Image (cartoon, rainbow, N blue to C red; front, side):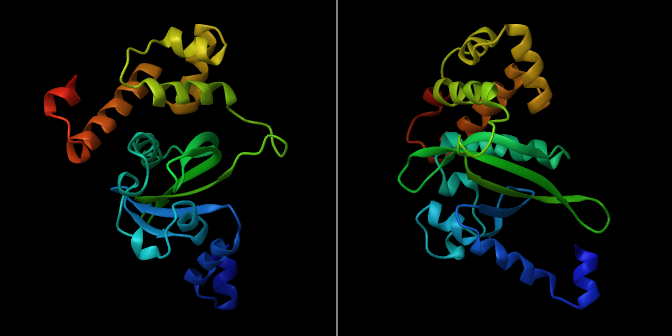
Length: 209
């Protein structure tokens, strides 16, 4: 694509404006720290915002539900390691504090030297009639973790939520998230706790508990 743009002498940044015209498709670019450096208009609409300046320079924790933001950051860290996310079904928060199932893809961004300098992603509402849900089994597990991350979570309870055997669940989770369910839950809790330290009125002892 870049070669084609060079061929006609086009300005590459202009291409990004097309993402403002695709209804219901949210598009964003983040730096290494998870700060937004660009978002499209559908993303602003999703969060009930009017200007890009209300998002640029901020992280998910400043515009989304803390629990979901923790999940997004855990995923971003995997993408920064060079592990793209393809067509994952996940919950995405909205301006009215509700959340809807979306299909999300994320990729690492590299500079001219091949070094990862950020991430880019797209997400759009999941519609049962339009597509096969690619990882519906694990979506049940992620939803369970989001709702019960403060409780004791076992692989058996997650497998039960997904209606599959313990062995099949563990294998599928490793293939999809490149980490064990136990480690995913641990990372999720760490992110949620870090956010609570900054934004929650709870004491440090309460957060630790």
